[in-house]
Amino acid sequence: KAGVTQTPRYLIKTRGQQVTLSCSPISGHRSVSWYQQTPGQGLQFLFEYFSETQRNKGNFPGRFSGRQFSNSRSEMNVSTLELGDSALYLCASSLQGTSGQETQYFGPGTRLLVL
Amino acid sequence: AQSVTQLGSHVSVSEGALVLLRCNYSSSVPPYLFWYVQYPNQGLQLLLKYTSAATLVKGINGFEAEFKKSETSFHLTKPSAHMSDAAEYFCAVCRGGSNYKLTFGKGTLLTVNP
Image (tube, rainbow over all chains, first blue to last red; front, side, top):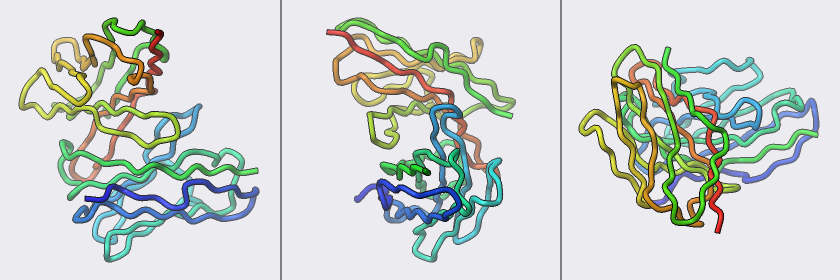
């Protein structure tokens, strides 16, 4: 099976712009989660989607949003970019996202640099 | 609330030496615990996970971890370090149900010296 794929791998934007990141989960996985990784804050949970519905959201401003399509692919959008949004954005997929013992499989991430 | 604490942001060992990476958790319910590894410019790869089936969990690349409820710990070990083990290691706890998410520790950077 192919793993989790994320596009693009690298992105450079300027302050005030918006950006859309894409994630394709492992085939058959219906839960997709997004995490932000920065040197200062570490790995932080952004949100989780299942069957096109956001089920859970982390403590991030409304500029961060996402969606999931019927084929389980997911996108996340960041509007009005700030310098502090520079980070590695990781997507993870799991089968159902209901039990805490389910493994989340991570993609390679999208590295966003905001200038 | 669930959380994990990784003691030591940087651990340095010699090749062939024991690797010990520490993780303590706090959880109001029996936890599901994970160790992930991240190589430079890559995503996270699962090393092993504890799901209450057995307290000693064996993972990939010769790593193992022991769940100790009395100490609220889930330390990661490997008997003999290899140069290829140099990476950052993350301990995480996961909640299920309506609050399904991984909560990560700050990570431990492992350096292996020849």
